[in-house]
Image (cartoon, rainbow, N blue to C red; front, side, top):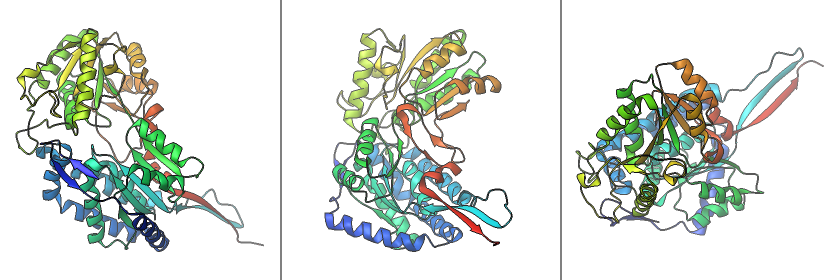
Length: 459
């Protein structure tokens, strides 16, 4: 596995793939460790998992520049991901006693009845590079808290992240073999599913890869949690606080160079405020500093790969050729060349849904903005998508936001915020965004199986 740094195009890190013998040994050790771990009280699991979090945070100074080198996020933002990592992990640890407690129906004379939540066994987590700590922790910590063992296959672009997880788990004193970071090829990971060697796979990535995973798991009765593509919309109503909406939507569109699962990729604005919104939005976009992510002044680093940047360039050029109008002059930014992963932000108007930039996932620093006549048209446009992860509504009317939200086909509805994941709420999506759920109490459902007890106490 090789990580080519987007900072300068050089090989930053490489690791040998796990041998067949190493995979077999890791599976055996994980199964043995899990059998013991499942009998450990939830409170004791919480102590050790909390130590994992502590140990990860203790490596912040090393992790932040590593992230910049591996996937291009500016160092000024690197610690923020670890803050989110901690928030999610500690929340899921904190709610575990209640979420994993037996469910007891109404009392019945002469019987004791309850449903226990049993761990599934061995969970395979396949994590992406764009938020490598946040996406992995969504599954890793809850899986361990639920009494499972975990195998982590991280993306090659962020292969050092998997090692950091291993170090944190080892230093925290987790039982040997319970957590294992493995450097696996796609075919090796697929074989684990095809042969039924794990009990659940949690994957975050592209729709195409999700289809491959489902096919690999077919017939093996392995559960699959899939968080796939997104084309998250925002709707700015005429009663919105424009300055607040502009500030937050610019950040939602361009943070992490637009490489966010729930980043804003298309915006619909009421006609009465369209001009003012667009003017303010484009002005803020022009203020970004594109450059070396290791420079503290940089707030827009390179995309993780030159190929990802090339796709966004092609998508933008096709939209312009079809009549879209770009509002940001790229000549105002440092020039790294047409084949570079460094890409200036772009704002497009005069766009419509015949253009790929408004319908296909961009996963880069470009956003299209369309005027709309009101709620009905906005809902129609937001729903005109193959995806459904989040949708944000910007308004002073919470009742209107809830009404519009009820009609939008999405996993999460935001009002006056975007590009955020609350660990107390279910993280899920609809349509081609995938299936399954992580975080909140519901996140434990796919990591456990119900086991019913019907005990007759009087004969």
